[in-house]
Image (cartoon, helix red, strand yellow):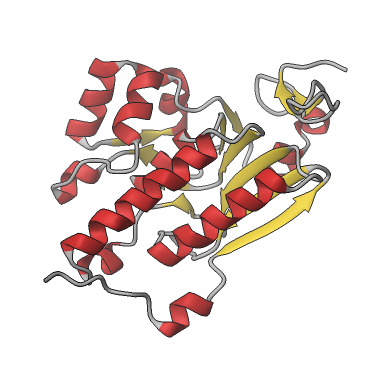
Length: 236
């Protein structure tokens, strides 16, 4: 009978996701640098943060990012996957899909602030957001899972197809190539690219920064008739 491998005691107590609210924005930060690869424990904490942001009356927008300046996320932790059996992998992947569906279906606007390399499962997380803003010259983006002999297993096949079309999505996945944020913007995967300097501050308040091709500022409603929330292209 297959057994599932549980996280070690140390892993269960480590804080792998940071959460705070700043001016109506719930900031969720994956915190396992340098690559911010996710384990089952990180996903449990990320899932909890998503639910917390949903229910937080002080949060009208969710901003998802990675700790450090090298990676948004490199996806699943390969070392962890190598140490568990197929049963655990199945339920791990199932939970990750449930988590991203919850993020995708959250009524509040979700912005992925891509501060570094965004590959594999990291891109799958970003694609579950409503808007993706990347840091200029901060890394590569793509779904290179085929190089490991697997397919994107956390909704990437479906979400990428909806963004770039079926044929282009298949091409990107079967070649496994990674590409620049500028190329991703041309394909419609990335919405905007902001300068490296003061990236997070500019994502939080681009009205003052003059970054990107759009204006993101407080306007509109949060879906409940309340006048707050960041919306692209709004004017006060």
